[in-house]
Length: 290
Image (cartoon, rainbow, N blue to C red; front, side):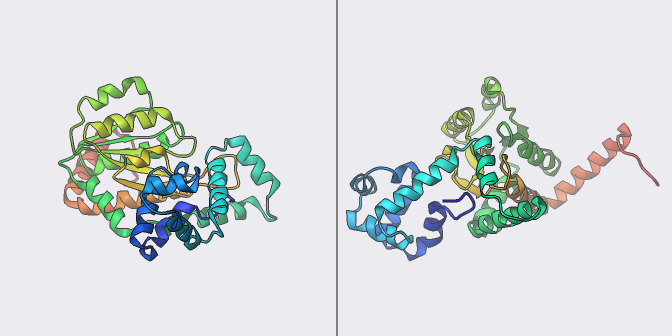
């Protein structure tokens, strides 16, 4: 499977409405521990899901595979893509680079990422995530990883203007107990965890979940292990012709979410903005031409 192709998880999500009750039960079982859940024998998968062997075969065929071996081969290829490091990603693109300038190739890849990602996002799920972030009765904690912390900080800086009760959790794991000390049941923890998922991030998610936090996850098409703890999970396609993954799709989601939450809280947000502008004027941080 090429990195840019649709994943099996995407196919399952898109086809849930066409499945029988037993097939849906199997689908949810696969997604709970994806993609590892489908790597064992057919009989083991059927037993774990509480369905029959023929049910597994029928659903695999509905997903477009000739049989279980082809289904497993695709899962293994996804797993290889999931753990690929930057050098391996660059070599893959270099070997298969299409003709044309990198500006065009990169842009086409980003547009393809956006198109595939948006097709998998339900508006109701997006609205539910925005409602959580707009609920000022809940504290919001935001954390990212080695690279994705930049997107986490972008969300934090904007949300800090929109509403009170925001905490930017720094990536240093030895400080996390300090943040968790004030976390209450029902508070929201926004986590960014992309390919080469970080063990520390999973540990933080487990600790926050145990304390009753509602986890909102931004991840890639293969999904971070944190997804099993997340109430809402946004899977963003991130592959481009580069040794690095793209932040364009998760950033698009974040910016759209900032806009939506701002609208939900506009009266309070406007007052906060006015106060902030007064503070900026006092500091003379920005130049004024009038």
